[in-house]
Amino acid sequence: MAEINFDNLNVLLVDDEPFIQKLIEKVLFDIGVKEVMTASHGGDALEKIRTSRKRFDLVICDLEMPNMNGFQFVEELRKGDDIPAPDVPVVILTGHSNIENLEDALDLGIHGFLAKPVSKQSLEKKMTVALTSPPIDPSILKRGG
Image 1 (cartoon, helix red, strand yellow):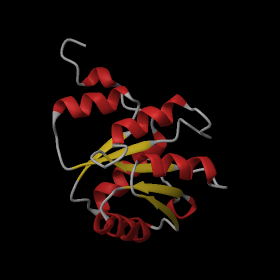
Image 2 (cartoon, one colour):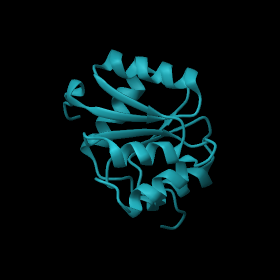
Image 3 (cartoon, one colour):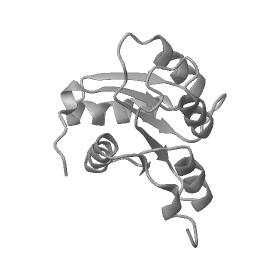
Image 4 (cartoon, helix red, strand yellow):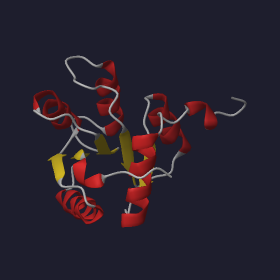
């Protein structure tokens, strides 16, 4: 697996639960990430991506949020309307392992899934894969595909 210099990363963390935000932010800091911006839903995240002076290297996004959920966020992000770097790697956070949810997110071009609760090791591994690999091919989940 490739070596990633986590301390140079600018990460956007999108989750509507303040406790989860703080928990994952702490894990990111423990990994070495120095720049983390948080958003409470997809619309907030898109606005931060549009207005940030620095490009985000990675987005970690919850699936279930009010106003704009994770699917809607990734779909809008990938459209690229007024969005710098619509191809930014996205890792989806989820408390579910529903196969339909996985397929829907993969079709949108995500780079990985991370199940809650999040550990330092699992987050570091998913981040490394996301930053060094293309989006996951959705055909891996499709039967007969």
